[in-house]
Amino acid sequence: MTRTHMVILAALAVSGLVAWGLGGTLGLGVLAGFLCGASVAGLGVAWQQHVARTRPERVFGAHVMAFLFKLVAVLCGALVFRFVDQAAARVDWRSFLVAFAVVVFVVMVVGALDTTRALRESALGRERRAS
Image (tube, rainbow, N blue to C red):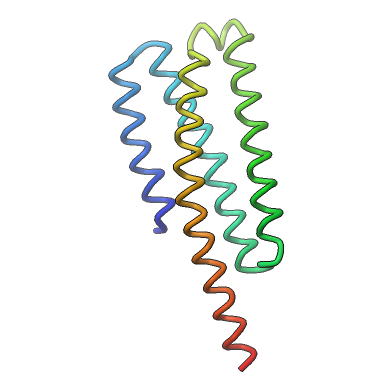
């Protein structure tokens, strides 16, 4: 289990407590923001780590693409929870945005540390094969 996984699980507990404390549409917004943000950010980090191990020269491109996917996800979520009446009645779009931003930032920072470790391991593996 990587640090990224542990941070996502800890953030799940924190967001669950915050959502429970807020209740109603605000709480559902926090949960929706966490679930959407953690899934998109977690997949982005996993993809970056895969690229770091297989094609380390392309890791920056993977980082940029993961960031663009996060932007698309937050835009779609905000638009749905703001302008679709059935969704807006259940989920607050502002709490969705705040929870999404917080969890994506935290996962992105910890994931960058894990990706750096994957790059370092990839470089060590190439050195051993070259020797």
